[in-house]
Image 1 (spheres, rainbow, N blue to C red):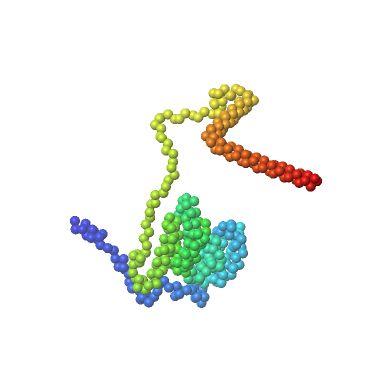
Image 2: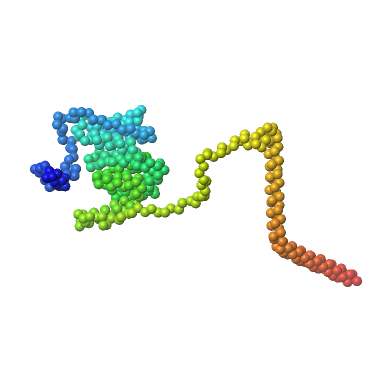
Length: 368
């Protein structure tokens, strides 16, 4: 019993992870372990032994549409890698790029920077931007978003949502994180000079593929950027200032579907639909000649046309019977107009006849 109680006490007792930790005399508080200025490799620095013992190489494939661009900018890439004492090769047959160390390579980490350079070039980043990765204070991250969404149409919509209208969402993300972001195919390439900005940009990209709109994360980043300016709030919790966005299930209107009544369960399968030959056999047309079939179709067409003409005539007669008053009014108006015209014509004739008689009487008086 005593042994079991001791074992339980040991299990409940919290672990002391600093039990075997010893203070290092060189590890003082004035050292900033995240500062890269103290760890830069100078050209005067030498490796033990004078050179690298083994040759390291990395190869990266590139898509076919990048071939012409890489062929144009490859002299620029070669010139930049020669300054870092790194050999490079462009293989257009296999569609690959290769970098490797040489006997003159002094910086052991520059081969990894060259590998990142090839990855960025293959992901459609311009050469002027991708060459910045060779600097010690620049870092990169490639997010593979192709496998995060199964549905192809949904993936395309969310990728476009990340870019935004005319690239506005992506531009806002670049300004807030201080990184260069490029969406290309199934990957999103991120370049930046701070690890924190790269992590923030990656989180926004992954959340967007998980159906969280990037505008929400951009709002949070804007608030965090303003809070960081205040020295009083640097050591406090910012959760009370950040907005809490909750997911809402909005009821969407579904299209009205015609409700079909379910038939009762029967163990027998439905009857087989008859073939065209079976229908012809039942009607007796199967044994008729082609001329007789055509004649029958013609008779059916003519009878159908006759029925439609009769139906249209009946409809026309019904319309005429329903509007007889309007036609009578029209006739009355027309008759009154014709009467007025006839009266005016008579007046004109009488005037002409009166003028002629007056002229004749004046001539006879002059003669006499």
